[in-house]
Image 1 (cartoon, rainbow, N blue to C red):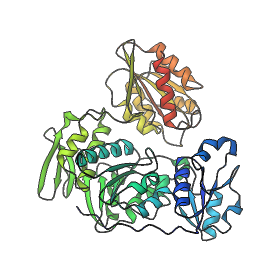
Image 2 (cartoon, rainbow, N blue to C red):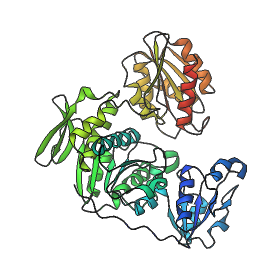
Image 3 (cartoon, rainbow, N blue to C red):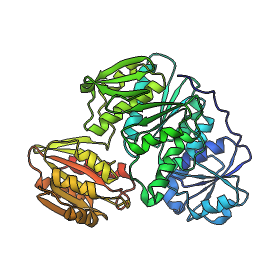
Image 4 (tube, rainbow, N blue to C red):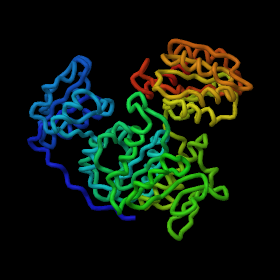
Length: 467
């Protein structure tokens, strides 16, 4: 399948650009724009002392800094306001910029406008990182031994702006995109996937309608030459096929009623593209746990097909892929119990998917900070599947109340509440028995105790390693 032509780089020389937030995306934005000749001002709500390391990464560049807040004076003479991922689009300064007619953008938008290579963009409420990593493996298998490269990044790993100068026209970019990034964007990748749409980040987006609208922007600027990949088992994601102006490829666990798609039949993952129906690999070749991960693998095959990768490359990418850290990651066996890290489960629904990935008796660690999401289904599954529920963090009491209010024949043998993760892990070690699975699947964000889910997962692994 062909891709449209290379986009021209934007002209930045002499433009005054304000970047809000000096985390990894903000650093990448400031470096790229400064190197392109823009007059860059970086503002962060933290004091200068807290950002010494980030500033060091920009040493030698003519970047101006404003710390301890975002004063309105930043907008004077500004041509563009760029928001890092953690900066909300309804920030007062962003609203003031709109009122003044100052455009808003972010690192993903600027990357897409300048990238010379075709881009696969992947979004969804769950499974983005696993699917992105897997498509990257498939492309790497396709390009092995030839002078083509695959670049994987975006919301996963390092911002791709940092690699822009090295990306060639024959390369392929695989890019994870969050709702936070998409809500500002007016550019779409040539292949765009919406894996699923379930309640998430409602503490920021407020309503499900706004959240879906943010995700849908990944399709909004495609052309007739582009491809949309949609999960047809998810009603909200599949409904967005009406937005697609180019080709649509579906993915599901059963054969599509019509059109092209990736699916399972006769114990194998298959692809139907036009008149061709091809086998990718046996389902048993998938080493990831859980039905949700099997669906991620099928989605990756649909995306690879949209990018013109071979079924051999898809099968090679699937073989030996055991997932991404903090996503149903096996940590170690302790006195006969297997400990798993699913710190990425920052919504109740993702915690449910994690629980349903195991048949063994469960000791579940859940909690963190609530995102104003419903806990009813989580509570019902806890009653069915969990022997010991250990809660921690700000959301612990709310989760406990939801579980107590739920009805179920079984119900957990015990419910314990702790202030933080460390004491929760110690309790899990006390109650776990040989043959159990001890599962960290919080259902809430990490921000009450850690900077992000990765730090929470790393701390959890460290705690488990010393048991």
